[in-house]
Image: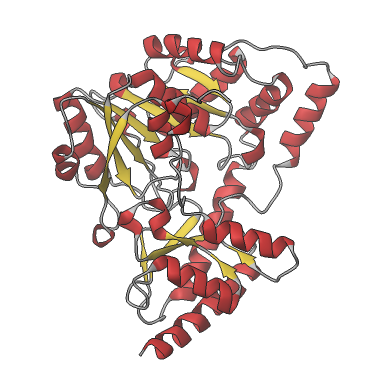
Amino acid sequence: MPKPSARISGIVPSGKDGWEVHFAAMTRKQAGEDIIMLSVGDHDFDTPSETVEACVDAVRAGFHHYTQLPGLPRLRAAMARISTRCTGIDTALSEIIATPGGQAALYAAVQATHDPGDHAVVVAPYYATYPGTFRAAGASYTVVEAHASDGFQPRAQEIEKALKPNTRSILINTPNNPTGAVYSRKCLEDIAELCIRRDLWLLSDEVYWTLGGGEHVSPRALPGMAERTLIINSMSKSHGMTGWRIGWLTAPADLVSLVINLNLVTTYGLTDFVSRAAIEALENDFGVEQIASTYAGRRTLFIDQMRGLNNVTVRGSEGGMYVMLDVSAIEPDCEKFAWDLLEAEKVAVMPGKSFGDAAAGHIRISLCQPDDVLREAAGRLRRFANSYERSAA
């Protein structure tokens, strides 16, 4: 066949992608093995029934047709109200574009702010799709590691050292996946000052904002930042709608008006009946408090189970759906630790280095399992860590 484009070929370079442990565990579980899956961030519960019924009603009412490219006006208005709550600054409908999921919002943000040959700084640990999203725009990037010793809070001075003459943006994620770190106001103020001084866009992934361990601080609300900040958001985590593919981008109105053209040549708008279910979920906060409470309880439960476990340290883990454990004192190679844990105790976790070198020596625990399963997994992990330590001694 003719040669494919360099752009599409370069999104995911050949080789390992860091998810080998998860895929192997999933295959074995589907074959009947008793494996506890703590490696993926998808809810173990269904979308709230009120949202499901709203979708069924919309289907039966005949909402099967095309929608406006930026999203139904009522949907954008609901997203604007949620964005005002999320960011702490008034958000207008004109500053919102609805997208099929948070990843599409990130893709739109990168496409809107980078030309081929431009450069970005990506703060790590990072979500797995970040590098490929910049490659898809023909942009290069430099990874700046947030240190485990700092609770995975990034340092603005290290970000500044990575800037180049063609740098256009900095990408951050708080509450963070995979670490669960919630960036402090001081951390965000330092990054904001850098963006203003160097005239940079700030791309802020805030899809976990309802699952934080305290006050959520969005850089969009900081002085001088509204005109240069793009917020990536989603209903996947906050409203329990991972498979519905509903997200949005909050950005300056002039930029949003241009991003609408991207929808023209990609999604051509969202699904009508799904959009109407999302409106009901946003306007009524279906599931939001319950989901946040569930993960706060699970986080506390699992961290409590780890207390007193020699040579294992909890890092970050203030928010989100994950707990990050430093296992480097037991086994410096976190990928080996994850494979050995799977073999010995049939517990699947993600090696930290799947999310960047900053998380090497760590494992990421997904809290997307019921309390009793998390307790069982914690018991297996404690047993494994103790035996691993003795066998290595």
